[in-house]
Image (cartoon, rainbow, N blue to C red):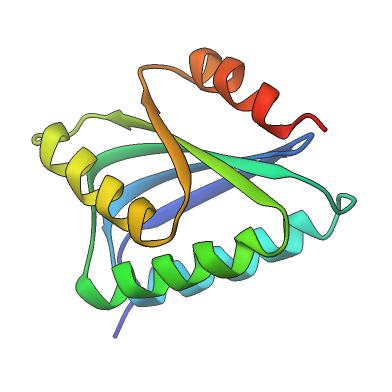
Length: 130
């Protein structure tokens, strides 16, 4: 199946900024995981987090959702500490929040929703300090 969903990645210190437009399928997630893995190898081991800026509908196909849960669990064994979500241009943000919350709970991920990157960074930084 062709990938569906777009991602843009940037690494700022120990925070991976992920910008994406959904919905996403398994193939799109596999591509983004490979790109993120390459970026994270550029920094030293330690605690790190993700700020996910999601445009459109922040939903995943069922197989993509399962893949994301497993990826989060794996990354938590390699320093992933928390995820901050910013939902933008969604027709159903409450549905998106519920969907993402369920995925994070299943992965035992610390998470929070924000309206902007600045607030997300303020929340994230203390979680990443040693």
